[in-house]
Image 1: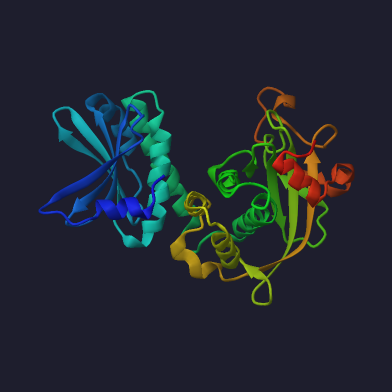
Image 2: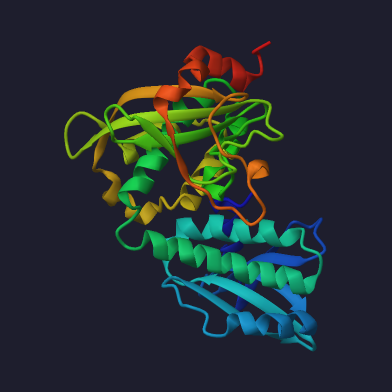
Length: 335
């Protein structure tokens, strides 16, 4: 795991010009390094490769969109050797850059060959560019803020009290685009958040969200929030800060910070999330299983996919579970 200490070690003063490097994932067949240039101290992720991979990736670099603060380049590094470089060009994105390069390196390390490694790195960089464009200068959109608040509330209220901190934080996989927001050792949890006072339905966004294939227990949580500016509610920032204070495990804390960035909660947008404030009205919890009204992938005709649908809350009464039952399912002590 990359943390600020690694960068600071690479930034230690050295005589003359050049760069300090540290290899990532030495078990990988790919040559992946962190680098800091001297004297400019530019932070960079390096992926070294050969001419064949260079030829394959060049079409992906045509008309590559620019992102302020980040730069991707591809250049010769010697006879038939090339380097893909992802560089940080402004300190404003310093706390975003570390999870970005860690994510790219993770995606690259297990790829099949040099060509697929470079292609994966470029496509993952494009994914991060899209995330940053989506968030934009105005921060997360209202629905995304509510969704993040809901997931973090479940992490604080249900998951952290039931599991070791490193396991609890690593189980929060929603920011990485998994089918459910939490993928725990003994269960998975999908979290929904709404500002409707007495919601009559739950919106499911795809046919895999409530698919319990390979999952011991699948839970659905619906949080009804009062959202307003000012008042006595809790801001997104204060919820994040309470989790930071609770995470005494260094690895869990670092992982948590990286996942926040994956979710689009960027440190330089902090002032945007002091408002609105949220007050929890109610939490509904259901266990998904036999008889639960849902659409799953295996039940769809060939050619049908990307289904979104609503489930009536009134149809879920027999599937309701308590917070104590949820805790037992998370811990794996449900018998």
